[in-house]
Amino acid sequence: MTKEQVLNGEAFTLPNTFDDTSSFRLDIEAKKEGKRLRGSVIKQHRMTNTLELIFEDYLYNIEKIGSKKIHLFTFMLGKKITDTVRYEDMIPFTGLEDVDW
Image 1: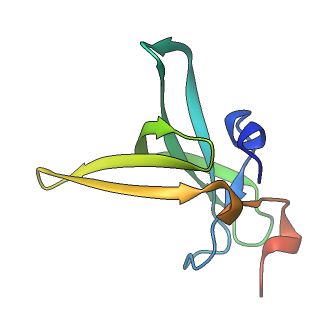
Image 2: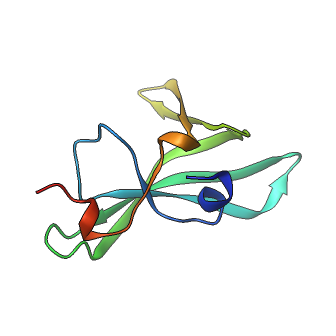
């Protein structure tokens, strides 16, 4: 995917995820805080057979949006967990043809 697609909130999947019926999207706040955008990565949970969206769940905070990847963080048991995801690793979520049954 491109950076623009991701910033526009288009749903995507990631390789090597255990769940073929879920997708992700970025939820960016409209205003910037300083020079950084604020927002989070949302996991979209879907019905197994129709892929209809059931609910969305917060997954990560966005620390920085770069030109090639997004820097993410969350807290687990009092420790800060960081990760990065490259735009080129994000696969646009198109629906049933993405599911490998």
